[in-house]
Amino acid sequence: MAFRPMRVTLPMLRATPPTVTVERASARLVRVSLTDRCDMACVYCRPAERGAYLPADERLSVEAWESVLRGLRAEGVRRVRITGGEPLLHRDVVEVVRRAAALGLDDLALTTNASRLAALAAPLRAAGLRRVTVSIDSLDPARFAAITRGGELATVLAGVDAALAAGFDEVKTNSVVLRGINDDELPAIVGWAWARGVTPRFIEIMGVGEGGSIWRERLVTRAEMVARLGALLAPGEGDRDADRGPAKYLDAADGSGRRVGFITGSSDTYCAGCDRLRVTSEGMVRPCLATNDGVALTEEGKAGAPGAVAATLREAWALKPDASWKGCTEATARAVSMIATGG
Figure 1 (cartoon, rainbow, N blue to C red):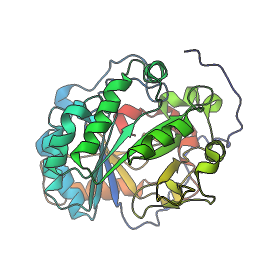
Figure 2: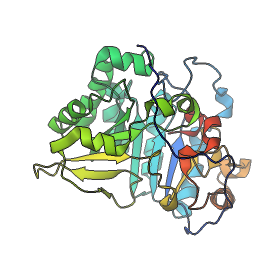
Figure 3: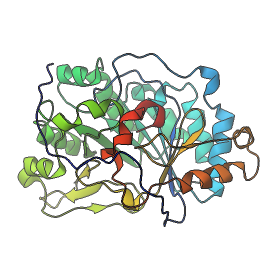
Figure 4: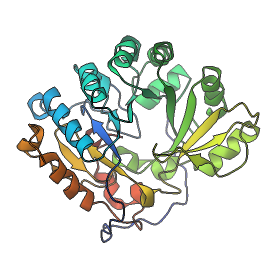
């Protein structure tokens, strides 16, 4: 598929981070990247080459993840989302979920490309996973393969069906909208999702990592997305779910209670209200997706020493940019590896 250039007016980029002024009390949501490995190479996420992964002995063990999660829980974190890379490539993902669920978190969710979800949906649900979000950028097999550089749509759709059959509290989809590539599919994706009781969400492409080379040409703003969905949606600005991240949801116009979510990482950034930290697969705690700043967990923290995880979290939280920061429109975002940091 040929990616033809387009021109879009975007916010001015700033080269250096602002002065840090942290007004939020502490992190409430942590996204943990179990692995930097992924079996797809989406055009907005990573280079086509699938090499340069971390050595296995540098990734956190199951025991280390349990220690980290226990430390997060002790520090007041109540919501954890498991990401990657592709988290279902981690051979012990079900065990990590089981140990996390045993900590009594308010929410435990996972984001996946669903390449292995058909086989793992039921075990993950039994282990205590509550919610699952599936990345699906097209319902056309050839287009899907082009965007993901080799992904098989039928396998992903089978994973969605398995997730629905497993009885998760909620199943959502994420679709990164790319001008001239899949932006004509929004109504079809909504119809497909609503017919299955799935909540679709559309994401503006962000200038992070590999996306930094195409976001100017491919950005479709939320306003454009809403216009393309037309009469399907009730008017309004949309609302966020409490303690559930940056997506704003618009209700269906028919009063059915169905919704569509929008994540505006480029046209309307949401840094001022961000309550997230991220933990990478090698144990780096990062305060923001748009920079490579972070604090490495100590060996004591990985081993579960009292207070060690807390100290790292507090140090990372102090690095969190202030409300003037414009997230993934910042120049620093280009140097970030999405598969290492976790989306």
